[in-house]
Length: 466
Image (cartoon, rainbow, N blue to C red; front, side):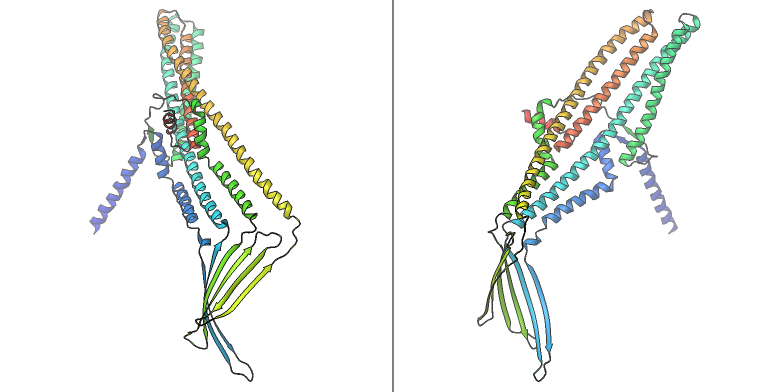
């Protein structure tokens, strides 16, 4: 028994040690892997999705108002009267009530409830894409900072080589001490920038770990050639197509459309005062002095309610009772609840104004969406243009550095000037990376608005072009 316990304990230790090793060696090859890792570690999003799905299910099953209602009652009455025989009555009654017609009001409310739950689920999906976009942003921020750190590290190494040469030349009297000191100041500055980039990378590492729920002790690495294989795609030529996608995917516009349609139909139904709410009630009862009760009686009633008559709501009913032998009861009735309503005309006008306000709000939302989308696309494409310019500039600077190195070896160029060219190249590479990162972030924003998976919007634009 003890051996078995030792073996089980050893297996548990090996299992958790194996998990710890893997937790310490997490490697991401794409932002999608980072998002999946974050979702797997997040109970919140699982619960939110389940809650949204359950709300949709509840709305789908919310047809209780269309079903009949049943009631059952049992009563016993014993009465003692002076100078008369005692009276004992037992009654069992079962009834059913069913609404037959309401002009479509309940159906309208049911459909509105289902659509509202669907839009709530769409809002969850949009929020989840925002969450995923946040993970992806941190992923690329860390990756970009890693590239920036490498660029500054390379610059420090290249500048350090020239600094050593200048120190020897200054000691031999070939280079002025003032030139060496000027170069040294520049070198210290780029060293400080390199050190700052390392500290920033550490900060982004902690932020990324927190976002994906990775322990502080665990390590990770990103192996992604995003900045080396960047694909340029401009959306300006597809603005109308993307606008249509965004409008179709906009939950806010759909909710406002639903509100306008619902208010319009409610207003229309309220003016159909001549359409009554029709209900039916049927019941069966057994009564007698003792059990079992064997004398059934049946009753049936129809009710016509004109509740949309605001000033004089009218209710009319007709019914009857019968047993196995005869119709023994017929009854008819009508009632009116009359009450003054001085603001009746004002309320009708208020309803019309509210409907117009809803329409105007929807139009304003569409206008704001157009302006927002236009700004996103222009900013995205401008960043691509800046990135393209930076790429071409880098090619020129690298070519110029080849000649500058030859001039430097011949003594025709000062080392401080050569360092300035190295710094200019490094800064341009950093600018290129920032433009590409910004363009990628804006493209994700467009895809969130359009309801597309990340990376899918450009494919849809190309397919539409065909």
